[in-house]
Structure formats: structure tokens, C-alpha cells
Amino acid sequence: MTTSALLVGVDFGLPHFDSELDELSQLALTAGMKPVAKITCKRKAPDAALFVGSGKADEIKFMAEQLGAQEILFDQSLSPAQQRNLERHLGLPVNDRTLLILEIFAQRARSHDGKLQVELARLQYLSTRLVRRWSHLERQQGGIGTRGGPGETQIELDKRMIGDAIKRTKERLLKVKKQRSTQRRQRDRRNAFNVSLVGYTNAGKSTLFNALVKARAYAADQLFATLDTTTRQLYLGDAGRSASVSDTVGFIRDLPHGLIDAFQATLKEATDADLLLHVVDASNPNFPEQMAEVKRVLHEIGADHVPQWLIFNKIDNLPLERQPLEFQDQYEVDGMAFNRVFVSAQTGQSVSLLRQMLAEEVMKATPAVEATHDQRFDLDNYGENPNQFA
Image 1 (cartoon, helix red, strand yellow):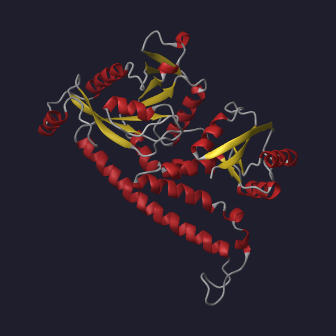
Image 2: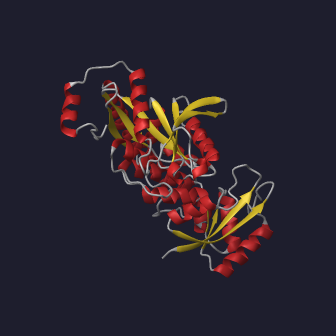
């Protein structure tokens, strides 16, 4: 049964405030919820107890009762105390943007390491919410014959159990990280040129990835359609060699820090790349803000030093007056000029131009080498575009 949710956003005067709550609505739909109404307000600062203040909280409660909302979703992150106080005041479950993103990631992760990374982020988030979720945890449970030491409270026991789970998950992720490091060393030994696709969620990265390497990675018009990094070989005929291309998880505004930390193993593909293709949804009117958010996350994971091209995707969705006059030019961001390519991954428009530019970049970056026996075997068996795992 679909949960009906009332969406709440608070404008603190920040430039990226989504007054229509469109992105929160998309997140809710992606998580399988049904938004029934939206309510926004302006404040100079969050209320320490109820985030929105008691007057607005009463208004939210009245609207939720009138519309039959089963849950309240906030577009900003709430502290554990604010979340607890709001639930008591409203008499309904209250969740924030952070938990919503975590829920979506938990639903979408498919690979073993993807599931581990989401589980770590979820456990870290949960560890800060123990005081909110279980009021019975304040009771003493110690004594002979009970779990935990004498006088140990249930909340201490649960915190210790979650702490142990976090430690185990980190150890398992460390093994994954070592495996990925081994794979990268193998690619380095093959003198591979590594390209990573990055960008805001739903910018069309997976569709472009499929168009470039003729793969079948899952792609859909929704937020976080894919979470698991996929790597394929792209044979560049003009360069006479292959490049390794990776499709990574999409970014989003206010991406929880726990997720960024947890996905370090996956995002390492971006930090170790020779070139980043920053895919931008050119048809989205908020693309400058989305580009700024991607830049912030790249800086946070230490990938801002990697050479970057801007790929303005979805030009098939642009009106005639906004169609590009040239498909390749320079675009300035914060005083720096970047190569920009206009493409439509959906229709394939100018994807061949991007392949040609990649071939030229590979030839500039590495000396021409004669194909090895293994490379010739690949070409004999897979034609001009061998789609193999790296």
C-alpha cells in the first residue's frame, strides 16, 4: 500500500531553495510514496525544537488531518531532537530528505558492494536516531541473566550492537576496496585510459554510457536509476586502442555525508580517472545549480583535480531557439574554460563526435602502441566495439 505524504520545505534564504519542492516530490515518488500536498515557509533560522516553529507545526498538523496524510517529509535534514519533537506534536511519522535518499539507495542497490555501502550509511544514520525511535530504551535492563552487563541500559546495548554492525560492514567494504584496487592496477598494467561519467542524478549518464559502449546498463527517467558502478571497454578505432569507461552513481543536492563516505569505494573510480565526463541535463532550467553541486561533491571526494569535459545531454528536449549552433565549444565555469559537447544520448546525436574527441585525447595522453595478442583476440571476437568488463 502506497504511503501518502505531506511535503514540507523551509526557505532560509539559500540560493538553491526549491520553492516548488519538485525534487522532493520526485524523491518521494521514487521511494514509492504518494505526495498529497506541499507546504513551504520562510525562516531566518531553524527553530531548535520544532524546526518550523509551533505555529507552522500546527498548520502542518491541520493540513495533514484534512488530507489524510500518513507521513510528513521535510526537504531539509532534521536533528534527532527536532524529528522526535515533531512526531510528538504532529502525531505522525516525520522523516527528512536524508532518510528518503537512504531508502531509495537501499531499494536500488543491486551489487554486493553497493548493498554494503548503503547498509553502512543506513547504520551510521540510525546510530544518531536511537534516542528518537525507541522510548523504551531509557529503561534499565541490567542484572543477572540478562543481555549486557549489570546496569547497562537498553539504549547502550543497542548502540553497541549497531557499533559492532558498523565495524563489520566497514571491514567487508575494505575487502571490496582492495578488490577494486587490484582491478585498477590490472587496468594500469594494460596502459588503459580511464574515463568516468559523473553528474547530477537523472542527467542521462547511464543512457550515454550505453550509447558509447553499446552496453545494456539499466537506465530510466527517474532519480538514482542505477547505483552500482559499471565498467566497460570502449574501442576507439581512430586511436587504435581501447579506453576503460565507468558509469558512477549520480549526485544530488544535500547528498548525505554518510553516503559520500560509504560510497568511497565506488567513487574511487572518479578520483583515479584520467578524464571525467560531467554529464549535464541541458534541458533542466536549474542545470547551473546542479553543476555546482556536482563540483562540490567532486571536491569532497578529492576528484576536482581530474581533467573534466562537460557533456550537455538531452538536447533533443530543447526548444528550437535553444538548440546549439555548434556541437563542440568552450564553456567557462568560475573563470576556467572546459571542453563542452552537446549530445543526445537518447537519439545518438553527436555521440560519434564525442567518440572521436575521446580517441584524440587518448592519442595525446599515451603513445601509440601496437595491439597486443589479447587486444587482437578481442577485436577478432567482438568486432569494432568489444564490450567486456574491465
